[in-house]
View 1 (spheres, rainbow, N blue to C red):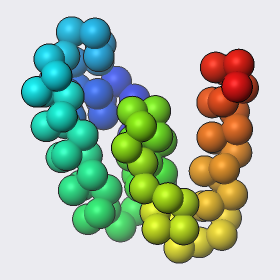
View 2 (view 1 turned 60 degrees about the horizontal axis):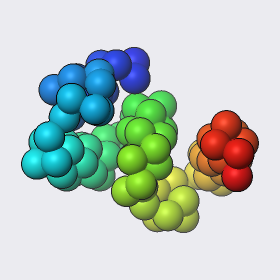
View 3 (view 1 turned 90 degrees about the horizontal axis):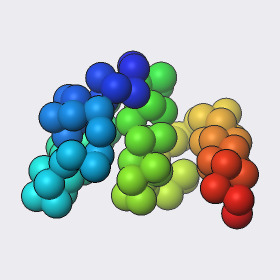
Length: 86
């Protein structure tokens, strides 16, 4: 699942600066619903990563049943925090 494709699907644009607050809220809600319904592990991870970037990702123990997926998500969080100087 390509990042730009996710952005277009949920927010109508690959550029969040061009998205209205209402479109952002609506896109986050649709993303959460699709995440809850998705069965493919890779697609779920991509959706969770986008939700993490947007600040609305569920906790790891809720989002992922597999420990390997939880560990991958932790690694992603650490990498993202490092990019932001945290």
